[in-house]
Image (tube, rainbow, N blue to C red):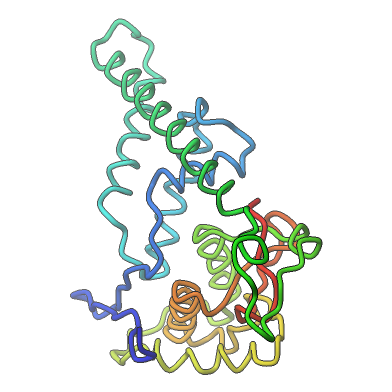
Amino acid sequence: MSDESHPTPRLEADGSPRFKLPIYEGPLDLLLHLLKRAELDPHDVAASIITEQYLAYLELLDQLNLDVAGEYLVMAATLLLIKSFSTLPHPELADTEEAEELKRDLVARLLEYQRYREAAEKLGERAILGRDVCAAKGEPVPDAESDARRFTVSIFDLVEAMGAVLRRIADATPRAIVLRDIPVAECIPAIRAALEGGRTVEFTALFRDLRDRPMVIATFMAILELIRRGEIAAWQDERYGPIMLERRGQSAGAQPG
């Protein structure tokens, strides 16, 4: 993919730009992420806290001007249906049984998907470099001891971190929407420059002018695009801690959390 390839914004009727995520993970990934953060298992998917956090996450995507795939909305409707009928005082109602069936089906899907993800992560942990192939001359060999201190970062971690950035925007007063191109591609060189020479930078440090919301969102989309291309890596030294960024090939990879 050339450097000119970048997420293209779509303008809504009110003039606000909408972006599609260049990195895709589905609603089951989001549910597992929320369950893990709440220290619950898939059987607790109908817990009120999960439904509330799921809806709050969709609201955050909207604040970031990110398009939400229809399947995320279907999952939200399913969670709301399960929650609404779980509070009814008439368990003999047919609708309540339907909600229970929806819950059982959702738990089964989550358990199956969780097994799939865990198997994929175990395969990814295998050290291929140095075992099945030789490192090219001058190419650094991953340091397993260093890797063990890192945790991978998901798209959901990045979006949540971006939500924290938006909350720091100094100018909270309503502003008129200015129709202008969102310079996603123009943000990429600045991000690369910030990470040159093996430098490690905290995610939030890349957002300089917090008053320029379009530029903040464009920078975020540029970070996601560079991660999708495999040019930069994101990790946490401790689970749910600050997100760090670096150019790939200049340090070892990350350990699944």
